Image (cartoon, rainbow, N blue to C red):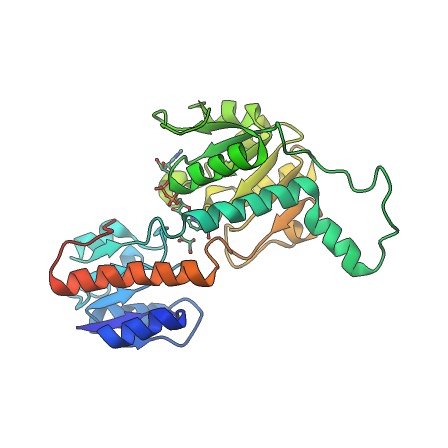
Length: 316
Ligand SMILES: NC(=O)c1ccc[n+]([C@@H]2O[C@H](COP(=O)([O-])OP(=O)(O)OC[C@H]3O[C@@H](n4cnc5c(N)ncnc54)[C@H](O)[C@@H]3O)[C@@H](O)[C@H]2O)c1
Ligand SMILES: O=C(O)[C@H](O)CO
């Protein structure tokens, strides 16, 4: 059984992979090229791809009889893989849910607090050496306690964000879902997205990416938000129509944004980089040693189950 891992991993994950499997670990930290993906499908039994490796229907169609039978994705989000095309090609897909939840919810809170309280702008001021000292109207932001958060995508991460907002920061919680969720704190389901956008101070995105959620947040949704509203996106960049977001921020239609993900990642438009009321992070959601190790173990657990002929723990 030949395994390909698409990026360098934490030491613990690489050690386990080398101990248990005949593995090749790519040394590049960049996404696989189409040539590399075709070779991966043709020459390996199992591949551990990740974000950025665009396993499109075209790539699958270019390798008609793939040796590969499992794509054990490193990450919970798998919108970079055309799962239907993979399955048609006889390739299973798995992901790494759960391990990512708390760390990603933490990054959502960092973005929410930083944007509301102007932390990035404040840090830039201190670093510039131009800070003139405290005064009662210096750099006033938006108070968080008592404000209302609206979660779009009330799954594992969405619920962990809502939990933090309620128990940690005394916020009211609303969310959008086709069916009400059973959570251990008061939370109002507002099924209409524009109604939710209009009713909250912070609109937080935690939906999966992919065709069904592409540009879910578009000009009409941004128009529905309060002028004091702040958009937080830890989901996938394509969930937001980025040019409409830039227009809404530039015109003052919304007050700010906190972003971990971008529509054309890793390209971040200059307009976003120029605005002081935008907090921008480089897709840090799961970026801790512990979480990346746990994600690697989950991916390898799926590989091990596949090799042993057991049912896959995390099928997509
Ligand atoms: N920034 C990061 O580093 C980072 C880290 C982990 C996950 N993510 C992203 O977060 C996503 C969510 O992860 P999760 O583990 O919470 O997944 P999940 O499946 O537990 O939750 C997703 C929720 O979104 C809901 N949903 C789907 N389509 C919707 C729509 N159109 N409108 C409203 N709700 C919709 C689903 O019903 C589900 O409740 C991942 O798919 C991934 O893209 C980002
Ligand atoms: O989907 C995920 O798990 C993240 O975006 C990558 O860690």
